[in-house]
Image (tube, rainbow, N blue to C red; front, side, top):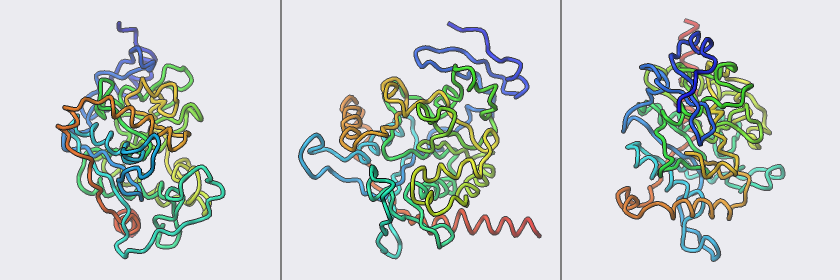
Length: 348
């Protein structure tokens, strides 16, 4: 049942032309009737890329136990995200770091990341050819590659997270529109200037840890008329000076958000998408299986995959193949060299 709009005056000043309605059981305020060029304009089938980035090949679990005969968690997540893309007619790519030179990925001090695998805290890509950054940073280079191929929307999702393809599944425009606001008053969409139709980047919320902050495990980048704004935000984020510690230790690229990006203008937070909250995993269209062991991630992801109908699995084909990427060279070409050229043109 529709309820009266909330914060109507503020919304009209933002020129969104949307009403906030309460829609159970998601427990969020949802935005409806987005105007042309607004929050609904994220691209049709074939114009949206769902992407992941990792240093680990898609592979099968090699030992006995809960994962025997199945894929490891990042491969399970890749399959689930490929199925999501298949349902909505989107493209899917699993970007795998493969150095053109064949150089081995160096390992770094992992004392402060004892709960993470070496592949996560390894020095995977270079900033300006000199500073090693961990794998999580390097997914920004994969985003750049997606934008450079002309996609209207590029969605980057972490290797322990997935978008649902079942009854809770939402298109990307629906996912954003349904979760930009939360009904918890102090973090309402209208009062916090969280973003709007001209916001080039949307990220998941970081609840239950820091509910008002973004979680970069889900990034929705917009091309089309917002392409230049996306490139500007992406290049500033990549160039963030966070020091050697946060280049290679938690919270990795999230440490650069507040230093380089402006909330509302550069990015918005999907406050209603509490996808880190274990109690919400079954009721949300996306879930981030974080802060649990490797085996627990496998259990959750394998159980989710097991509930998908076999006919749908057959229609969407086999496990996806990886797409090779050299993140350092990609960043040099699309994020560093272009940014330098733009600054030079501006001075001229």
